[in-house]
Amino acid sequence: MNLLLLGATGRVGRFILDYALTDGHTVTALVRSPDKLKDFASRYGTQLQIVQGDATNAEDIAQALKGGPTVVISALNTAGTTTLSVSIGLLIRLMQEQSIHRLITVGTAGILQSRTEPSLYRYESSDTRRRSTRAAEEHRRVYELLRVSALDWTIVCPTYLPDGGRTGVYRVEKDFLPEDGSQITTADTADFTYHQSKSCDFIRTRVGIAY
Image 1: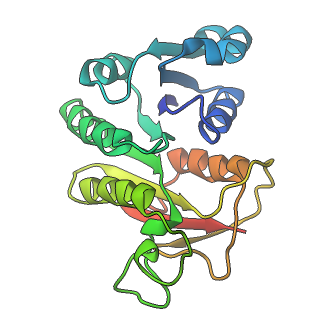
Image 2: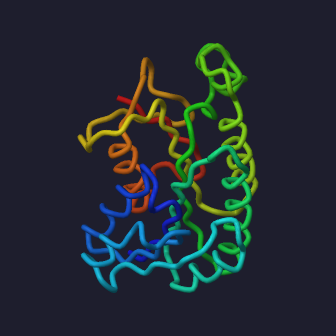
């Protein structure tokens, strides 16, 4: 495959990058600081194309898409800004213009449906104890943008996300967090996210993931 990865230097993105390159795929990474990927660049050579730029800049995204990816994966985080929604809005437009259909993003369990109050998102209900809803609201904007787009999208929605290795053993559920799920490591979140690039099981839906 030929992948475009946003957020390749992040906690989940670095694992996605490693898995894709190890499997022999070509990856274009759009990053603000290429130096953060110098270890990958030295190890994988031309298999990894690094584009320096900003995921909220249309020209930079267009440049990264010139590699002709078949799948785009976004592992960007909110960082207390509107980066996610701005980036996704640009991706939707540019991908549709170039007839690139498959987009996978990493979201949050907060935008899954509540089990106790199914008409609400988890972040709006008693399912969550988080006081701040800023990040969840940004992820919700991403979901609402994708839902009305023509893309084949998937939003992977992890719960509490500690650092940790890959086990490959976890539970997933469409639109809901697996019952009693309390955490999932960055590496296992990346594992499931990466494997969606080769799967059609969760097209145009949110997927909760937890142990």
